[in-house]
Length: 192
Image: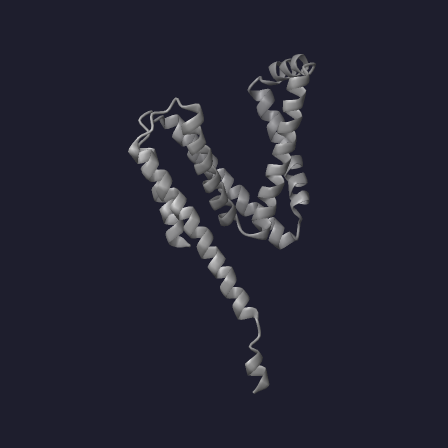
């Protein structure tokens, strides 16, 4: 498991070395996001395991507790009047309403499955699954969106990152399989 995590980190660093449009602010925001997401998942894991909360209850508390901070940020950045105006203008469009509703449903499904994954497995497993999702998103972004010059270091980093994610999944599978085998009582031992 440790080697897998090291492979993932090494893949990220190698891929970053191939980023010729390096932006200090962008990377600092990405690292800040990773830090807070890690803390967030650890708290979800702890509250689910220790308090026995379900993923729906955690989602409710998360939304309820995040709302004051979100409202403060919207007001502090002066986005509230513009956002409200844009929402009112665009809400008459059927296309916008359908996309907005689909986005809400997908966001709810994403958060629910993320909380469920964290409660059932661990914060680290959820993070590794997120890394593998990120590799897929990055690869699709390279192919479909363009705008970034693909360098050999990017590809090598993504391959190492993916190998780390797959090896982590395999290591956890073997761990679970070994625990299941140890849990099966030895019938022969009982006969003697």
